[in-house]
Amino acid sequence: MPETKKIPPKRVSLVTLGCEKNTVDSEVLMGGLRHNGVRLVSDPSHSDIIILNTCGFIESAKRESINSILEAVEMKNSGSVKEVYVAGCLSERYRSELEAEITGVDGYFGTEDFERILRTVVPEANIATGPDLRYELLGERVLTTPKFYSYIKISEGCDNPCSFCAIPIMRGGHRSKSPEEIAFEAMMLAGQGVKEIVLIAQDLTYYGLDLTGERTLSDLLRRLVKVNGIEWIRLMYAYPAKFPLDILDVIAGEEKIVPYLDIPVQHASTEVLKSMRRGITRRATEELIETIRAKVPNIALRTTLITGYPTEGEREFEELEEFVSEMKFDRLGVFTYSVEDGTTAEPLGDTVSEEEKRRRHARLLDIQREISHEKNLAKIGTIVHAIIEREEEGVYYGRTEADAPEVDNEIAIHSQAALQAGMIVNVRVHEADEFDLVGDVIP
Image (cartoon, rainbow, N blue to C red; front, side, top):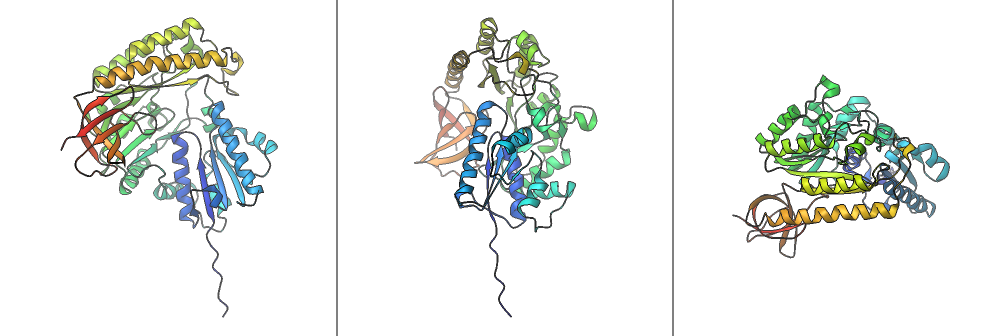
């Protein structure tokens, strides 16, 4: 009987662009691909198939995604890869335009087309449908972050009416995952060695409203702290309007929930906030921050701002400067405004020059740099909790509870004993600069 020739598995490279939400989507899809016999490779040039999970959030992200598509198509044209597929936010929003302008892509998919992608890439596989597929993919999720931390997306889409944001256009309205599904995902991650989970969504505080008619993030947190193996739980992207104050008691009372909150306020001028359709005033924002700090005195607050919005004149920008100086956020990021197609702010145009946007951007970061330096100097002599991330030339580097992965500061740690990535240790700080700390492990 003639010997049957074994067909080698397809080699697929999945390139992720954009935010942590895309990272989670890619990890779930990679799990499904691997489960169905695909060989995952990190180098696109060594693959048979490239899948690009694109971002369409702001202009710079769109350009990066388009350039990545063009590079992948060029690799296909040169014969180094066989197929190119495009998924994610850019594809969801601009599919027809991309199809018309870029030839050589074998298929476009939206933000949640996991089943269609799997059936296209591995048509011979027996792929489940509906809820069965969703749970199967969660269980097979492939981590691309360091093994000791991971993101959990607790909801999809957004119902908030922000004038500048195209997320609802790309990802639809808010849909909370069930608490059972989220707890299952946390348990699966803990089983893979994850110590820190970072909860993400377009708006964490909206969680549960579509399931029960009430905001139930606090109930979800109480459930997640019971997951064995998880030591840190971090909250990112909490919308300030209609903020559920009950979560502050949970943050203050549960040891596993790190005293950290990312709360993007976007602006300080009440007039700008009104045009942005944020549903909150400057005074209400300040009162919320005061309440948060009163209930969780050691909390680290991170925020994000937009400068150069069409109704932001010099007076409104000065108000924003004043706000940043007074509020003294622990961490702060700044975006310059870009017009997004289909948003309610689009008719306002783009009235602030790029040069002025860059000036305002730099000014806000200068103010924050001084605040960060002041806060870091105040930590000298204190003891902080830190998670070890890596070792370089005998020095360990990690993050404190006040620092989220990828976007925040580092701490350099000296230790007589060997440390492993993912260990959480106590560190006495003895040196500080504008952004980073240096300390010694306390045995």
